[in-house]
Length: 490
Ligand code: SF4
Image (cartoon, rainbow, N blue to C red; front, side):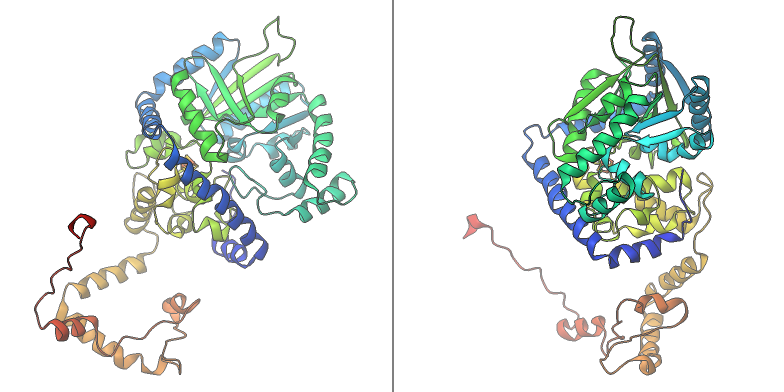
């Protein structure tokens, strides 16, 4: 997976919080799509659909080998070729071999986070093959030499003015901030690329085993062109994207477009399942489906994390997460950002390597509420933290911070021995005195405690503790719980 230094999380998060423009964009996004999705779920006539889809996803995982074999069989029956890639490198090598065999000079891409996961662009470019993104947002990101910051809205961190300046610089048009004019400029530039591309490289929203077809949703129409005009099409799919039947596909797709963009159906849904037949005027001569494992089998084998594979990559959890809403997508340093990224990136790329991601979310539960398939991301984040706290052979995870673990052991020792605890609180009152400022707070602590006062003041240990106040007030008699009158009793 393409990630740079994991230590960038904190710096990138601070930079995101400091950017007034990013804050405005994220607030707009969350106000519209976060709130909108919650309202949509609440108002949906079929309240059982989310549970049904989740159940069907989990059921598929119980027989994933059989379902994938069925998919492969049906794609091959349609004349397509199927390759199972165990690793990211395997997927890259296969795609590169297809490109070389077909003397590909230009690749047009669309809808593929998986291609970012396996980091295919540099390998193609090294062979002198031009790679062009065709989703508008991804195209803007590519022109800017930037990275996506949202699963569905990759350039949410850029505003119209920046995009206008970028287009003037890269496409040579007069500066404008007018979205339709900018879109037309991109369309004109992309059309020429699409008309002359040799290979289309896509992702896969869903693959249906029963029909042997994959589906791709888009709102721009680029996918249709990228998958019908080039001679060769390669689709990269994570092995969990499969559904068993068309009936399951229908409901899963309904949740995907609702969660992603509050749409009952996206503008385009493209189905691909093989090369053009001899009677088809359009379509590729070759169709390849690359089914990628790249660490998913390990997730599948662990009941604690298997649920994360049910994700349909709608991006809704980003649209409500209070952490993503402040730090933005770049801080996650992965194609998968937001709460889903905080779970799936460590699982695919190393828990220790991405410890900051596991610890960065608040566990507020909003992501679970908004998720179309009710993925319990907070539970999985807690499980990841447990692995960091205690280590895990299964996940090759070492204890992340032994000093922190020791500190919590000491803390447990104290809070389970009231006499010792009270004695130390009394001592703390004395020791803290030189650190208390005029405002009555501790403004700066040193050493490993420095982080506690880096962004806020710390209240000192109170003169009288809560325990003392409680004892004085109730003298050992517990208060009874207040009675709450219900409307009928009035
Ligand atoms: S975890 Fe749920 S809300 Fe987040 S991207 Fe996946 S399906 Fe969407």
